[in-house]
Image 1 (tube, rainbow over the protein chains, first blue to last red):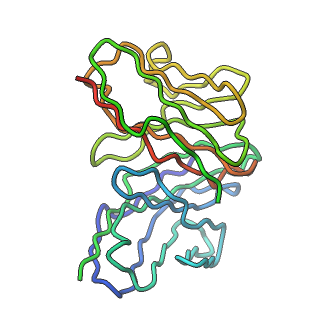
Image 2: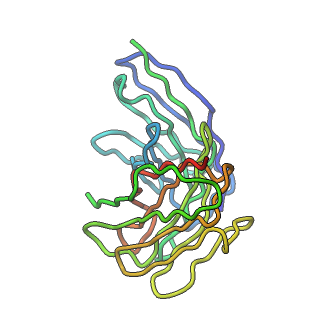
Image 3: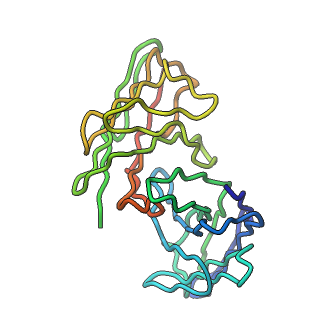
Length: 112
Length: 116
């Protein structure tokens, strides 16, 4: 599976939009891009998943360019409670349960 | 949404003893579940894939005789850490795919194991 690279940490003020970019140069045709959020001492929580172009849900947007070699998770108007680690994963759609390989993640710190 | 639970949420045991951690899918069936380990300030590391009705498959470097996995039913997988040592102290997390597609997974809340 394609290895992902994302910034180790980011800082933001409350109310700002935060964009976290992930690179996955070796992504394959059957691969999807998925983002998870993890708070300390909790299991990760699924945020959003996409294949190409733009996907939006109630908490975030995911932008994927045409070559799919990168993706950007956009969190609108972050609050203190968005302080967490965000993981970008490439997952292969094989029709059965897929193993998830977590990279280092991006530690987002939101302050007032 | 789908819920995955783990029990216990934390456990302290003495070196040399065994500890069993349960992972349950509460409102859906999971023929496959995954077990991860996470050390402080580090990412999740996949340990093994738990398969209902068959043997678990372990990732490279994970001792299958030390980390026993049993997928007893479509809603329950257990991880037993045998002959625990202090270096086994970690945060253990399980996950289960919600649907057959597999790319959206639901994670349990984790189990904090401390071996003294």
